[in-house]
Structures are given as structure tokens and as C-alpha cells.
Image 1: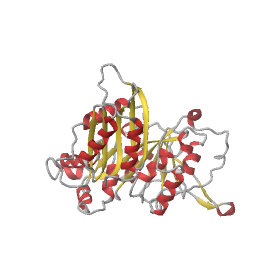
Image 2: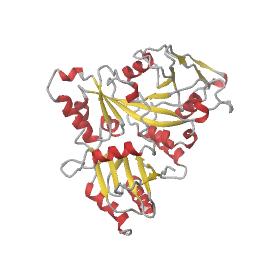
Image 3: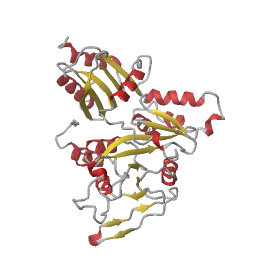
Image 4: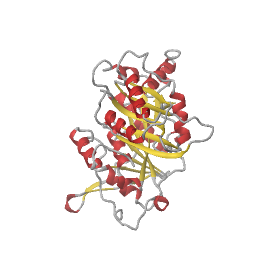
Length: 388
């Protein structure tokens, strides 16, 4: 069960997002679709969840190009694309919006030739998603394009946390589209200030980074793309980077990633193995970056929970943690536990038994700002001392 700061976690999160203006221009509350509220209409496959991929990125990076690619490709999938608004750059006619009874907005969903569905939402993303998955036509996936939403974290938190949605939809991954030619300039905008430009946050929360417009870079300097990828992985080493021209990407590389699925232990372990040598000690700034810590002894699960709540909720050590992923070796248990966190929400799940040939070990990758490697190592060690 996911743990958040307050008992009324979802409402508190939504209120905070509204107060901070996080969702002012975000995908917001919908539109009644005839028959959507019929309790006899079930989600696809009689109750199986539909994956939601969040697409984010700087203005001009190519998000609309990616959406157009999905909407116009013959991929054989029925994908719903939810937009903040239809603009000229999206090759779809604007949905009809009319005043319904009582002044409620009524919105049409645009059915496309390749089987996709396209719509805009006004006010409640959660309600729109509920209505969408209750449509009688089978859906394979949902793409949510976040124009105007600089920081994907609040949206990801709602999708991950909302118990009402869990049976219908699941957060699959966050895909960040970046402009290969201009990314370094965007990262350098306020690198030395206390606030970070949108590009850092969008990269920090990404599971996949689409490095778009690479054709505009390869002709300029040898090794430029490799240096750019190194900088991206310095911020977020767990994201997969895909080079593209005009966002022409195989959809299998961005859909069904299951990045938030606690049962995908093999994938998580591979990520942790790749990142095990990551250290921030050689870095001389307090920017957004990734580091990995390890603890060989079994840990007390209650102490780990308290430790996480101190660093995620109370910011006890002055660190701002955006994401973390890990595996835990827990006292009095032969189960490998997986750990995931997005901002203040974390989840620890017993995933499978440790194998005889494995060496049980605690490994956690952190992505954040002002990360202090020594403090993280020492404070995790405290969770294990009583079990030694």
C-alpha cells in the first residue's frame, strides 16, 4: 500500500497542487460522456488496468510531433490521447464543445481512422480517465500530453496514488521529449540558482527521454550527442534515452514500460546494477543528479519507513528527493522487497523470495537536489545496526 504524508492523502495532494498553481494549466475536469456513469460498464478486459503514459517536455521539443506520430501511425493499437487543448499543431479537428443542461460542458471524443481516440479535458483529469476507460470500446493504452504543466510530479502522484483509479488505470511511465539542439541552453538557464528550470524536473522524473532533433546536432560536432546523453544521465541515470528525428519512435519502446510495477523485479535489479557505482562525491555542485547507496545487512522495515518519511516528508537533511527506486533485504523475511517513491509518496512491496544464489543486499537509487551521499549512507546504516 502506498504511503503518503496525510490520511486524506489524495485530497491533500490535489489541494496543494491547486494552491501551488501546479494544475492551473494542467489537464483538468471533464465532460459528461453519455453512458459513462453506467455501473454495468466495466474497464477493458473485464477489469484489467489500462496503462497511462505521461508525455512532458519543453515547448518546441516535439511533444505535438510525438502525439501526431501516435495518432497517424498504423500501429494496430487502440490508444486514447488526452490533450489539454487541440491546437493547430495537432492534426485533429477541434472537438465540439457545447453548453449542456445546467451549463455543464459536453465534449465529443474524436474517433480517428487508425482506431485511436482523441479528446481534451477541462478541470478533472481523474474523472476524464474514469469515463474514458468505461467506454465500451477496448483501449490498449492512454497517452496524456501535458502542455502547460512544467512539473510532471503532481500529475504522476495523483495517477499513482488515487485508489479510485487503481482498478481502472495505472501509471505506466513518464516520457520526456527534449530538443537535442537546445537542451544544454535550457539546463544552463538557472543552473547556479536555488530554483531549477523546468528541464531539470522533466528529466528527473522521466522513465524514458526522447532526444529529438538529433539531426540538427550530429552535423555540428563529433561526440556532441554522447556528451549530451552523459549530462542527461548525470541528472537521471535510470531513464532510457532514445535518439529520434521528428519523434519517429517505435511505440513499443515508450508504451507498456511498467515503470511503476513493483513486480518487475528483474528490470529493477538491472537498473540498480547499472547504477551501483554511481557516486556524487566527485561532484562539486548541489544540482539535480542521481546517486546509488548500498547496505549489505538486513534492515528493520519500520526503521526504513521512518527514515524515508524523515527525508521525503520532513526534508530532515536538507535534500529534495524527486524519485527513488530500490530493493530491500528485510529482517525476519526471506522476501526481496521493492521500494519506489515519487516526491512524498512511497511504496514498499514484498515482490519475491531471495534466490539461493543471490547475495541479499539493500540498494537504493536516489534522484534529487542537494543529495548528500554520506548522510544517506550513514542514515540508512542506522536502520540496519540493530539487526547486526
